[in-house]
Amino acid sequence: MKKLFDNDKKTKKIIMRNIIPLIMIVLFISRIIYCYMIIYPAFEINNPVSIYINESKNYNDLLLQLQFKAHIKNIYYFKQLALITKYIKSIKAGKYEITPQTTYLQAMQMFWNGRQKPVKLIFNNIRLKEDFASQIGNQLMLDSKALLDYLNNPSIVNSLGFDTVTIPAMFIPNTYEIYWNIPIDEFLKKMKKEYNQFWTTERLIKAKSMLLSPIEVSILASIVEEETNFKSEYPIIAGLYLNRLRKGMLLQADPTIKFAVKDFTLKRIFLKYLKTNSPYNTYKNHGLPPGPIRIPSISAIDGVLNYQNHTYLYMCAKEDLSGKHSFVTTLNEHSQNARKYHIKLNKLNI
Image (cartoon, rainbow, N blue to C red; front, top):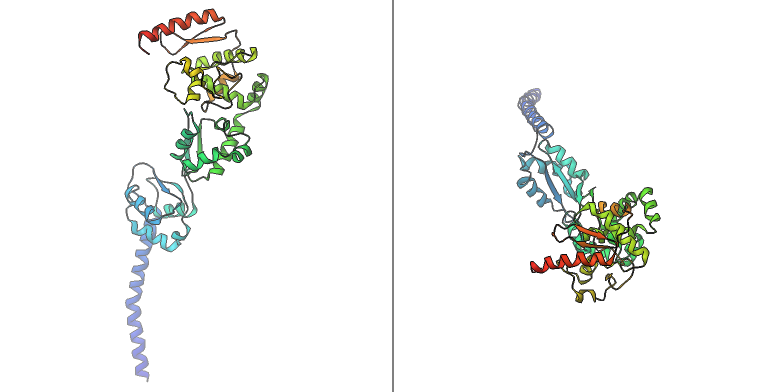
């Protein structure tokens, strides 16, 4: 019995003598791998790379992006971390940024926690709501058609303080930091917040002194911006249209005709276009049109708010086709300028 016990002890010693070094080796290798995951960069890139996870939250698609966009050194390590953290059950949509210094562990922590990189959302030079929805849909995860449906929904836009034709005035062209996967309703709330911040006390006081609401200022600014490519002319044109409004004259703004017929390529406005039945036809309807004919820029809005006080009532493109305008007070002067301009257009068969 004693001999058997001694043999068991010897066997255990032999096993321990062989297993302990093996355990030490495994622990050593594990430590190396762990250090490798938390210390060394996991991606072979020179510049930051954006990784997108959409609403489908497709894990395999993420792996493909890590391999072919971010050039991960060893996808197996990432998969092991995903297995350990049960990441597949916690995938969060969003736009994420991988940098040349990002480690395996940092990447996993970023994805697991949904720590996104905000998108720099930029929009400008937009005429129609369809164009706006398309431009936003190209930069964010939200669906452009769904966004357009929101903008055409009376109850939604009314809750924001607008209607379906004035809602473009809420969007102030600028650069905004915003999360790629923001829901449409949250996006609209953010834009309304930005709108409120834009309309400072100073701007509101200026609008009130002109007897215009902020929306009316934006409507006028949209016409002014369509009239010229020169920002220096914004305050002059704004003053001219304000003079017409105050005298009860028709605005007779050619850009509103282009908007009414939905043809922005027109180089000349003929009599047939002036007969168009539309609330945007300022040759037939007094006052401002019901909504903006484009999303006006900040410079156009401020050009209206800081309009030039003068006596001009008429404007005509210069005959040199520079895009600039001649401004006059009387109809006779205007007719002379218009005749010179039309002669030039006729010579060029425009």
